[in-house]
Image (cartoon, rainbow, N blue to C red; front, side, top):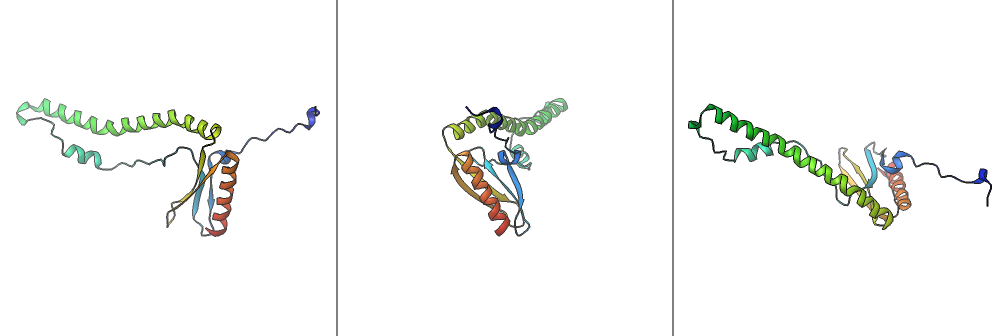
Length: 154
C-alpha cells in the first residue's frame, strides 16, 4: 500500500475542456471548438413574420355585424395565439432537450457512443469542420488537434 502522501489525485478538468473553446485562426477568424452534446445539430430560432403570414390566411369567423366587442375580443384572441404559439413551442423544445441530454451523455460515456467534435466560425466565410471519435479522452485529443490546426492553418 503506497503512503498517503504519494497518492496521485487527478486535478479537476478546466471548464473549457468540458464545453469548448474559442480560438483565433491564422487568418484572425474566431472559431468555436467543442463537442456536440446532442446527436442532432441544434437550430437557432429567429423571429420572423412567419406567424403573421399564417395569421393573414386564417379565417377568424368575425363578421362586422357581430359588434365591436366581438371584433376586439377576436383580435385579442388571435393576437395572443400568435404571440404565445412560438413561446410554447420553444418551451417544449427546451424541456425535450433537458430530458434527453442526460440520456445522450450517459450513452456516450457508458456505451462509448462516438462524440462529434465541431469547429465552426461565423467569420466572413462561415465554415464548419467535424470529426467523430469514440471516448472522452480521444475527443479531448481531437479537440486539441483541431485547435492546433486552426491556429496554424486558419
